[in-house]
Image 1 (cartoon, chains in turn cyan, yellow):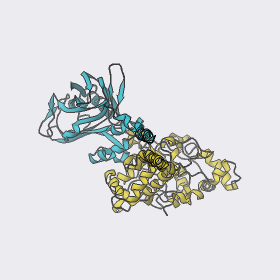
Image 2: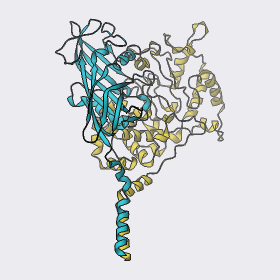
Image 3: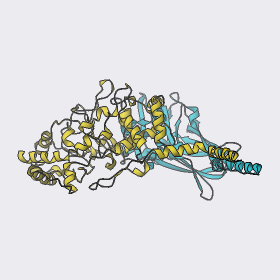
Image 4: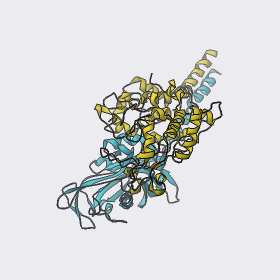
Length: 251
Length: 348
């Protein structure tokens, strides 16, 4: 009798916390998003290289940073996995090699055929849902517009022309008046297989030249310092949303 | 046998004890009642997503009055937002910051923030939770970074305890810090003025002067200072000559639109008696100065609000001296002594 009771109670003791263990079933895997910032398919080089935009203007780059957020992986049947927003803000910094590889953890095992992500921060996502916890990263890398309590979605700086005059492109949202957050949905070149044993990788090419020349054309002659600009910033934001392509999936 | 059962029961109970402790501490952190005054509109702030609790409020208040939020350890939120003057910086024209730095705008009162849609003089912030980022990080105000503040707070056992009591995830991070500040600020409701008691039929009555002032106010001021919050929350150019020292573009700074040049938020007039000096740059000292500006001091410009343009191109709101006195008598019925002396919001 005693033994029986002990066994029963032992089972109860063990099983009483069962709910804690449910999440640890091996059905999740990790993936990496590998961002490569290029111009004409070559990695961009800061300051040493001179580039020419579609308007025939030469420029050199000294800084390139942007925010990637709200990553969603989509299966062939349309089923979506939304990466947790409170873990889901990433700063891509051309100068920081590690920052260009985003690790996404605990993704349900399965086959995915599309990816969607945001460039910048979705202001409609208030209340904060972890967005505020990106503040320290953003402020350390100069991506916080402190006067507006908002994020710079992209920070692109350098010099242009024969005189090496400075140019500066900072695009973000301000108040309710100007929302420059964009989402991009891309087909994967082949099926992404999320498995538990190893991290699959999605290679993303970022054609930086499209900041100037894509859906819209932007030239330094028009304006070399674009920050809060109700006309140009939305056009550049539109261009930015076209600069991403998937170049490969390795499972 | 009985003993054995007891031991097993204790074991059984202890197996999940860590979870149980959490439930106990959350239960101990009582929710605070957020009551919308009967004569107020629905709040803009979604209170259900950050419901104020005793501990969250206490934490928010502690943060509000803590100089650790600034780089020199001295300038707290409460430094420029003093309760006795409806949380404004008494007699200071523009905000003062670390190392004697001066800002460019007048610190606004803090009250009824849960009912406001946009914040600061130009409306650049659209959610109360994000508003404190500006004064905290502005070089001429508190000049501090969130990373550094979080480090400082983590070193304080009192904060470690309060954060863990106030928030389920127990974390000291930017989000919880801002949420706690909001919990403190949304509770700062000012709705017990003489005006409110009259509006809610609670037995108060206007003096003759105040009553006359109220009628004049409705005719001459209430198109912008409308409703029980005494603001339509719009942005307008009220004809102040541009001060070349600041050359403040107002709302244009955030929209970039020409039409928003020199427009500023229509402020609430609650507790206006105490929130001097007036205007976005604190240029006017008294309420009489303000009314004199509206009657005789306006300057025309492309974006001057058309409401100020009368027939024959005369600018401003015509008012006699007696009318001005009466309007000021009415405005003083918007002073809320209960709010100004409410211990819940006091530093000490």
